Image (cartoon, one colour):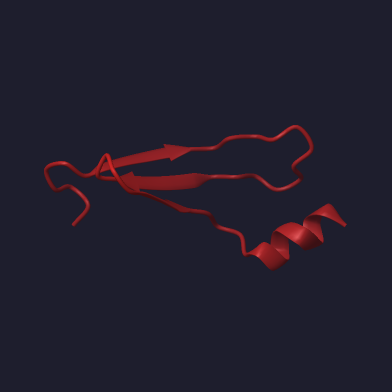
Length: 50
């Protein structure tokens, strides 16, 4: 699982100045490599900005 020694999990919800979609993010890191998961596809993000 994600609760291994040296593995850290962070949730956040950063907000850009003109972003229309909420941006909840899950980040998993070992201190060297970070992987971020977002709920939206690139297509959904582009469509929301049109």
